[in-house]
Length: 222
Image (cartoon, rainbow, N blue to C red; front, side):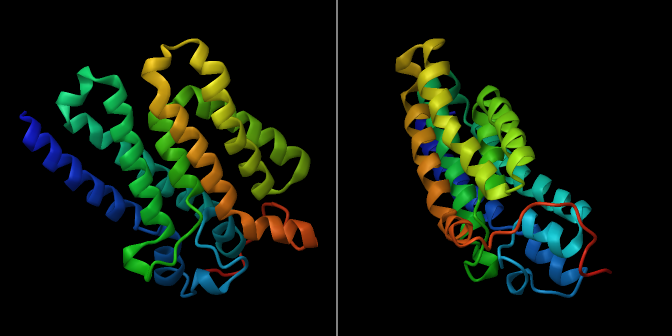
């Protein structure tokens, strides 16, 4: 594969990743199956947590898995660029770009008037493809914080805050620093991004209006 073709495919895959991220199972399922607009319910966020409040934990799980796979699938597009396999840093950079494009699509979906979710599930899917080891540890941290606080927002922030710490302080000790600079910068940017997208949750926590997580029967039934 030539360099020119690789560049063109790289640009095309950025667009594909964004369009893939723009697919919103929360909005689609709430409208087509339950006849409601998820933007008008609960936190008004078309994400897995708000979906489980409106449609039950089973639909929340479906939405979470699909949103997760969007990020993973976008990052896996890099395997169609064989020239990057011999350049580990560029390989990771391409994964990061595709992952960010998918997250951007989730937050600003083209198909839904740019009104999307916070991008956490899609972000986790991208991280799963890029650095599964760190994601595994962050998942454990998420579950521990959720068990003690019952707040998904706090759990997400705690887990994502730990991700750059793991990448920069722990995993960097095992890898050549020259091969990890892209991932290290990416981890910090993602941590800041998740904090910014959860400002509304932090405000609700401050005012004591944030809902705690609990498995409940769906408010809306088929």
